[in-house]
Length: 487
Ligand code: GLN
Image (tube, rainbow, N blue to C red; front, side, top):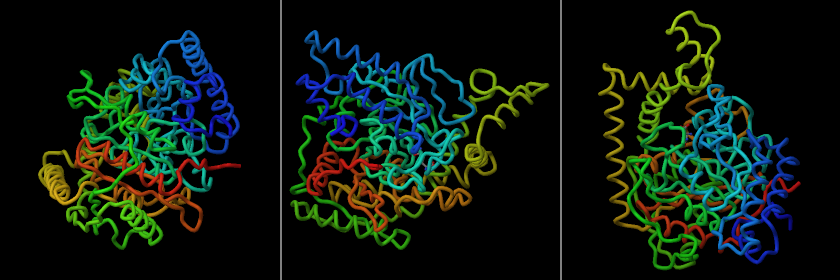
């Protein structure tokens, strides 16, 4: 099998046994990108030179007999809203088209210390706002399972690159579902960690109280390996939790015996396609066969979650994006006569329509006459949702739901209809609002051959239970590691 098709766990073993070098793996991935990415358009920047240099450094250390971490020498591509020193970080926006960060995000520092190789930066919806990657200023990424369809969003470049084997694994970010929804559309694994588990330092902020960086990979073991590197307290992020984490990869056991898995009826309602409901219920039956107990639960505030999410996320975005003013960094208009005009023209030219929509919505819900009616109510709804989840976790250990209402839609299909686009997040946003961890795992294909994802939601810091349950389904289904676009 070609090296680029393998998982991080497999390559890690081969590297340790010196059966392969990191340079060979990296060359294989770079050749795959050169060959296939014309079709998929997942990458905004490919750093072939940097990646090969990093690979050679790791190989030299290994030759000298240095003990290396498990991910050393393995290519991991990065969503383009995570700052990489010396490597352009655009957020898929004209605003940051030429932005080269002078520092690394904490997750990048950690991956570098672990010897990871960085093939490049991945496409996304502009400033992570969207569900299809169509909001990128630069290009539309295609779903590797059907190139007429979207890969999901906003981490669509990450999901497509992993599914098309144009990287071994990737990092994404998830504010309302942006890791899980594209993972589901592209048939890969995506984990949104507990809020506070992974440092946000160097992640370009969208909605700071909801944003989390997380791993996207072709297997649960690879996902666990990435968690081992990126989790942890960071003094640069005051919201990062002060706790230690045992090795998720070492503790990974494909087991659910004795676990109670909650099935919330609100997540299987009329708006969800029959194929998706059936596939997730089949996954539930598999869990039952493996010794888990299924319990019906109710999460009644789910109806309000989407509205609350779009109010809170837009409010925070409007404040976070105020820094892009044409003065400090980012796009500056050439056409201005006054400071006022400099601000106005730089922002008008630099931001795309969806970002502008969010900024307008956000400033509106925070304005003095409407604050109580919208923002305050949304924050109250957030408390209610958190409370409902707490009650649910008194009755079960994990919650199983579909990740998305349907499989990948056609490019252009929802672009003119914001509400339809926002509905894509209906099953994922509650998790961010409650600060919980959740994982999307491939569980079936629909009649068109498109992947269907199941979402497992856990209580705060229950990532090990989530990973174990995900691994159990993976084993039961005979593995997910099927590369798309096998052509
Ligand atoms: N699709 C959602 C939005 O547009 C979620 C985005 C995300 O998680 N970054 O806001």
